[in-house]
Amino acid sequence: MEELGTPHKLMDAQMGHENGSIQARYSHVTDPMIDRLVAGLTKVWAEALDARPVLDPRSPVAELDRLLMAGGEGA
Image 1 (tube, one colour):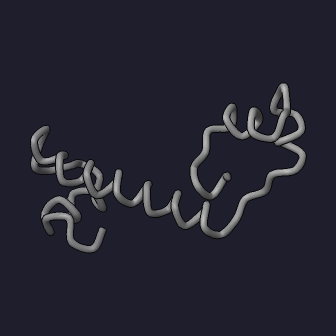
Image 2 (spheres, one colour):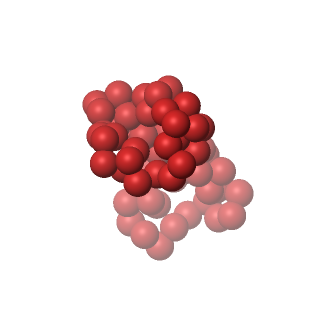
């Protein structure tokens, strides 16, 4: 259920648990969860980088400025 992105409250209900204490004990992080997190964060970063030039096309932060000038390439 975790890898399907099921909300914790729903998992508790499906497993008959009244609170999250049992789930915390028996759940674990899996490789697909990590992959989904990395993909999600990468997508958010790319969207933010694409939207950033609206605020200012340059940045005083050297690496961000490099990425902005490259049009987001290499992000």
